Image (cartoon, rainbow, N blue to C red):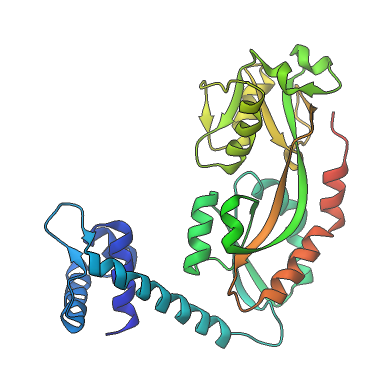
Length: 300
């Protein structure tokens, strides 16, 4: 019985498929299957029902998986504690960041962030929120920068900043003549949104639905830039976070009435051994003058 066998069991339970689990664990399928079979024999328990096309846990296997996940989690904590030094943030640190924040926040902060934390080697990965939460839980990520969502109650979160939503409209659209856009003014507009899985879409839809505003099915993509390109040719309107409101030909950004915001946070596992470093980095990010300037800058 060893930790690698436990990782194989966890992978099979996740993928419900031996080959996919073997690929994820970077071993051959016979190796993975053989090790899991040995583990079952040692435990005297059949962990998986192999009689169907989709591999499923047996009832005993499901109970044991809970303990296996706990053992793997505690092992990760042990590794992290062993790596702890006098400096709370040192070495390689992997940070997840959602796509509606990454291209607008990183150019503002990354250079000075590297200068301020010279013993830290930051690696950023763009991920959607659900994937980030899974990666935080598994230890694949050290931290994450994302919009606050209810699921973060199971994590340690540090508030970074509040960010207004604005409406991006073509300068040829009659809405561009307004000083502010009420949500009710969007009735009948072709309201463009990102595809499912983006928490930005979920947040925007919530206040659209409350105002009775329909969302267009004309285009659903993964890039705010694509939505803005369509807005520029007056082929719809869209919501944009304040940091994304750089000057673009043919587009005006209008404040929303009533004002709508999202809270952006710095998150990690509750048991992460360098919580003081997380707090330190969070305070540094939220106080950065470049970020404050962008959040308070008036847009057209």
